[in-house]
Image (cartoon, one colour):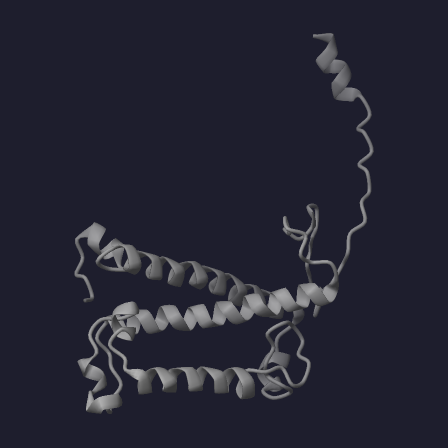
Length: 198
């Protein structure tokens, strides 16, 4: 009985201080208060520039993943563009979504897809004017709406986009994996007895 009571009132050992690298990005820090530096088990982030580069890549991949999930679900619902593809085929002739739809595309359609993505990557989706945060591609435009928010709201919106992007990266990966290993990417529909989109 004596040992617990003694240890209860014993002085707490002093926590060893450790150097923490702070990298502020419009008030956003990659240091988590109370936990030390960001979760980086591979020790890839050495400088603030490293953090900015990795965060930009994360935001970009998240945005692409959000579009991919939306596109996959939209195509699975049966929505199609008007017009014709290579070889005179209409968009409505393409059945399914994901891999199933891509396998039905000819060379010219693939060339258009690749050219469009390359054009967006090289000419459009570029940070010409440094923004307030990684992934800020406004390039000095559309400032009125964003500038109207206070710092807390800005941080909240940036974190919402990051979290939605992370969820979408997991989502599109799951759709791709399930489509590759099974008859449908929509395994929840199958498990719950709901209609399969295609």
